[in-house]
Length: 360
Ligand code: NAD
Image 1 (cartoon, rainbow, N blue to C red):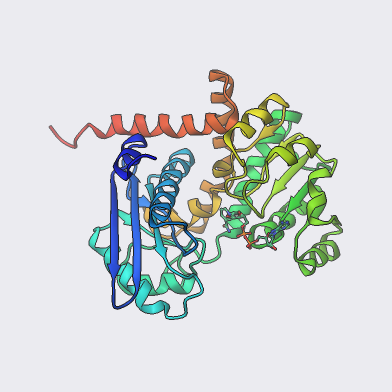
Image 2: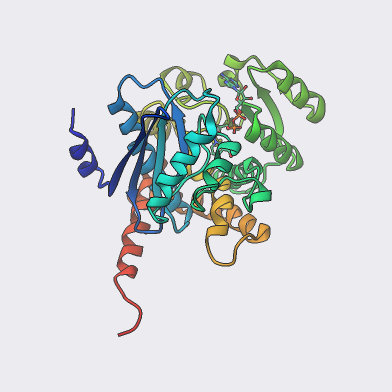
């Protein structure tokens, strides 16, 4: 196994910060991957089931690098970072923990901006905000974007339309059969939009009440959770779990397009190669699901909060997806690799632009 520094060198990380307070039983790491495009931004995860501290550190580093690619590919001027608090996400004494993290983040002078992630809540972000302004995913009454799931859904729809254009020669979702896995915050917004656009829907969730609500409201058909992979459809839309594109599902999927909001859809990278060989169009997850974070961080740029501008930027996920296809065709790559290349090219080009200083 690499040492931490070898790992950081391999993927070109900038910084890793360790934060602790014994009296508060607080331990956290903040990883900063790349700040070429702007301050390192990415949520704060709270998790305790790491086999070792080393695994927690690696998780922070890996997630931070993922954020660099997500922002770069989305055309956002932010870099990639992530914080991990090693601790029980159900811990009830949250105020001191998150205010402590806020203090540490403030020391970084804006080089790292945090937000909500697995195991943390909007309330936790409010605690962080008491100590630092470098936090996103805030409620609207604190100047944040509030619930970003509708924008994640909108962005995913835009990626889906670009995929349809590639396969069917038209953006239209009218009459397309979409199988949606997961009817939570993003999934139920997806259903509303897909219904408006005339799609035929098959849905599933492990929560029968959510399924019932969608079938009653939108006339969607329902299947048992595991049967979603066998649905004969145009588009499979994973909005629940990661690793759903795996050895088992690849034998069963009967769709032409895979486009959903779930993070880390490919169980392993080679599954992305397999999709390509099978002639399926795969919308890389971090391209399709960037809408929420594009909208949420839009206010950090010029001119503060603007719903119209934020939404307009989310709709451009269509163009990002199209650009991924262009690179895939140009360099003969599967889409998941083309997305990475698109991100890397942008970082390289903007680094070139940044070498010019203002004035002579
Ligand atoms: P959520 O927790 O609100 O919804 C997930 C839903 O999936 C729940 O209804 C849950 O019951 C269901 N589910 C869990 N296991 C399932 C299974 N085996 N089969 C069918 N359904 C199952 O989460 P969310 O915010 O809607 O996010 C969905 C996915 O999109 C996650 O992977 C998340 O990381 C990703 N994502 C979300 C956002 C956002 O804005 N919320 C942004 C980017 C990515």
